[in-house]
Amino acid sequence: MKTITYKGYTAEIIYSDEDGFFVGHVVGIGDDIVSFHGDTDEELQDAFESVLDHYLEVKGRPENPTQKHFTRRFLARLRQALHL
Image (tube, rainbow, N blue to C red; front, side, top):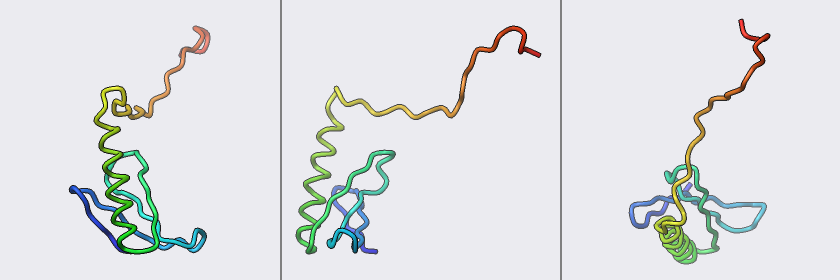
């Protein structure tokens, strides 16, 4: 697996037999999924820089706040007869 970096972010590159080209995924950005593809090293680097610049621009807009994570709790109201 190959990695490339840009603006402090890292992307892992793998070859996809199914798609027939190289696919990159940005790592370490939380729950967001940012991916890109290309056939050559230059195409991959250009695509990575383009998609990351766009991602950072969108995340910087006030109408796109960071998503809240689930608390992994389930709250339910039970009838009085079910209380112990």
